[in-house]
Amino acid sequence: MELLKNLISYHDAKNIVFNNLDKLINSKYKTISVLNSLNKISFEDIKAPTDLPMFNKSAMDGYAIIAEDTFGASENNPIILNLVEGDEISSEECIKVCTGMPIPKGANAVVMKEYCNEEDNFLEVRWSSYPNENISRIGEDIKKGETILKKGETINPYHIALLLSLGIKDIKVMDLKIGLISTGDELIDIEDLKDIQQLKNQHKIVNSNTPMLSALINETGLTPNIYKLVKDNEEEIKNILLNALNENDIIFTTGGTSVGDRDYTIKVINDLCSMELHGVQIRPGKPFGFAKYKTNEGEEKLIFILSGYPVAGAVQFELFFRNYFKPRKYLYLPLNRNIASTLGRTDILRLKFVETNNNNKKSAVEPLKITGSGVLSSIAKADCYTIIGENIEGYEKGEVIKVYIL
Image 1 (cartoon, rainbow, N blue to C red):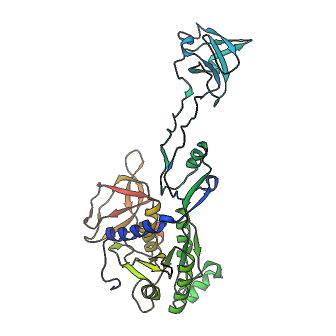
Image 2 (image 1 turned 180 degrees about the horizontal axis):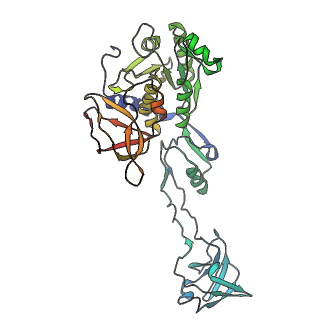
Image 3 (image 1 turned 90 degrees about the horizontal axis):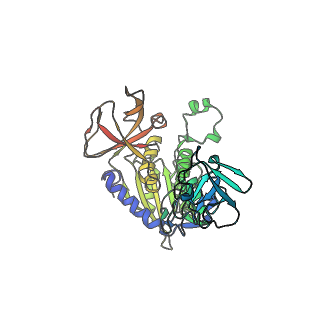
């Protein structure tokens, strides 16, 4: 393969990566307690084993009644019911209930206690109820067999409540071992930094890629294994890469993705692995690479080769990894100025919400900075981004575009 010469389209690159991820995750799961599943990725569709509620229950504190017994009741024309105990009522009887309690046999409504006056064994009702009022009926929330969690969906606190309400204790979640390797002579880890002057004197750059990517991986519900920063040394890169491939299912590398004399990362990966692609018609992030490594046992591992420039690396991660597991929510908003693009290339444009004359609401978007793979502030300040397809030359002011919320 001629590295970085045969650029492929974003659409083709995404298909290659996503198809390989489909194959890899087919058997990568573990079973954990629902209580510990927050932000994990569901490995399978979960269907409700029963209706929810499982029985007709009271939605209010009050009295279970036969609705027809209260027809015509009002403040000026109360009706009197016999207050009884047990789990069944007959005509002109009622039973005191609390929220969540089962509805007694024979009852078909609950009247709120605020509309009643209890005295001795009688209940004065000043409200005309209708059948099923204040009753949560069987299956009102969830029907048996209904899908409550989809494969690939990130588990949130409300999923946990729903799963537990249905008596589900354990769940299968994605279990991918991910390694993270950053390379570069110019980099220094933050824990090795003495002071700012050290950066100026030694012309060093703080390694922000590793913590940024670690946080992004954590956001997807996965946990990375972080390896020590590697200098631009071919043998060192080879050794740590082989070690990481032995310990993980997926490897992320940052830096050394081009084809310069000191870009050893791409050289090592090309020597050891099957390079599936290197170079995509996107901006930022053109030097994205993707490779497969096969162990002696025939197991395949995947390598995501990310740029050392923070914005480019973040965009590459967003497009080719996060969007597989946890796609962004999106909406449509107008632009407040023209933007240009180049035919044949997909542009990922960072945007911010801006106020318009529409009641001072943030109801439009504008670009922060169109170019600059190293301008970290342009993504830190972004509220959203848009993808400008390869067949689009740009957008005009006022045109409504699709934006993905960060």
